[in-house]
Image (cartoon, rainbow, N blue to C red; front, side, top):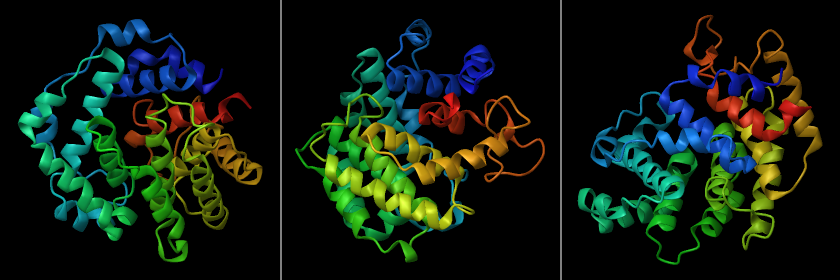
Length: 289
């Protein structure tokens, strides 16, 4: 049985949060209507105030490295999650909560947060996906006609990867691409920024080759998903990532990310805790090989 079939079969064993993540990724990436009925009957909460108030970033990857910058941008965790919720409500349900958000968090304050992050090189390097998601979702939901994807991509391509955390660098690149796809809903093969998106993947591919034994497996599999989105192939990197994944799932019906947590009984070894990497694994194409 494929990992995809296993997760489809055991879908209702996931928590509500993980069900929504899995269903929307499968729906939008594969353009399937399989989860349409589930999504229609299970719209997530529109209580933006409670999402905005949650700033517990203690479980983010690279917590110790990122902690000073999360403290500097103390609204970021809640703002990013709220922008995601607004995006999904609008995309999946045509429910527009942007005016409600502006009542809770003034638009000038949001623009100031986004612009300050955009100018803060350390924040972009270390907060990585969190900064990128916030900047790009701000522009998508409250547009000012700024090509933030091009700016972010040029910044990432200019970095010296020898002095940059390899996992956070790959996440920086992949999330620029994912944001450009409006979270798997837009075809990037003819995107205005296509050339520089390919440059991001080329630089990421070099980092993965160099750091294959230590880099986050989630980041590597996400890299393959982005290769599919952009329409490029890196066979050497794909084969190396596949070998690791095959080894980690040989005694399990789904992929277990032992690099994230080796402890027996870890939450990240459960169906729910492993959902993120397994959704990416299915989308990467490795599941069908």
